[in-house]
Image 1 (cartoon, rainbow, N blue to C red):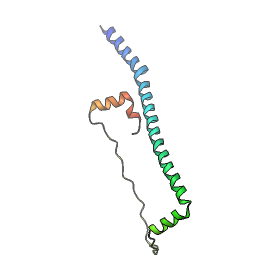
Image 2: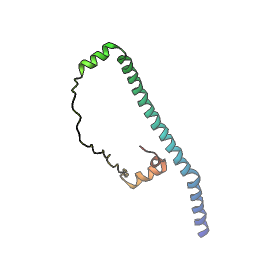
Image 3: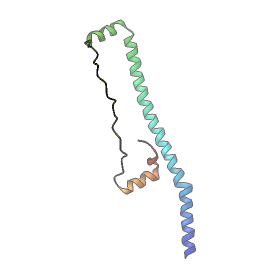
Image 4: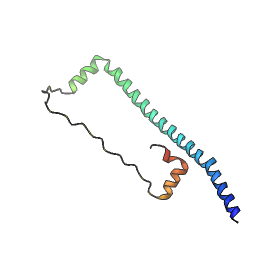
Length: 114
């Protein structure tokens, strides 16, 4: 009986080491690619918008319109020291339940920054 349990433990460990852990990395890499594609799409849209803006700013009429639209006030520079800004600390988000953490572990979501 002890031999059967030992064989099952070794078999289970070998299945985990050969299947689950590489699968987690594959899923994590697929999630990273998906995130990068979404970010690329956002950047392409922003680039297209900026191209239109650059083209518009190359005309004298658009520059004049902007100059008339925004009021300008010239102020004396203040002689005060500016304190450096401190960014807020972001705490890691814990899963709501233990089974969500287990699912994230099995699917590799814990390896990907959201």
